[in-house]
Image: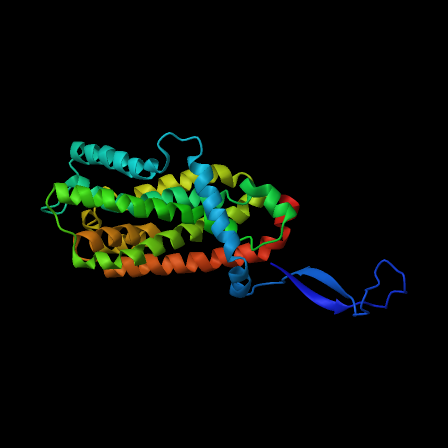
Length: 298
């Protein structure tokens, strides 16, 4: 973070000097210095730059679909194709599904938040090194870069919901009233992507090796997230709670439970939510501590 403060000039300039003012008002010097240590996010400053955040999001959306024939349709096609693939895998491996729920319905519900996370987290992680010119030449809240990179995939998650509605209609399944809580799970998914993506964005500035670590993180987290399998398939309750430290473990299951009215695994959801909150605070702390060095390393 960089702060600026106005300080009186050491001495008044002579008449006719280039620094002399026409009305004789006192001059000021602008001193720019980094913010030391940990401070909470400067929400006032972020609000002041709010239009920039909107422009960054729009820029990323436009760049993503530039020269693309299908354009935003990819936001719908990707989870749909993945749902078909995982449904086939689940059928071949005879993965148990909750009674009365078809495999495509069960899997697609968890794929919506997972796809948001699996795309948003790597985008946030690479946001700083992919915006070198902005980081080195212009001052603005650097947190906007990972925030904008992850936020565009929230749009994808929202666009996928009507497609899932058509799938429910095809199987004659009505959404449960608990679907009203979906905005909470959308928010938790974005926070989970930022909790990991923000700290990786800062680390990647100093160590480019982390660009190669991100895909492995996504792959490992996928296998320990209940996307095409249910939490109930893990018999040990202790193991369920341990796996809930993975932020997406409880979030993906909670998203699915909210849509279909399945029993909510509250303890798993609370642990995953707490894990997300702790990781997010750690990420913001590390980002703020190292932010003043980004321009020198990026």
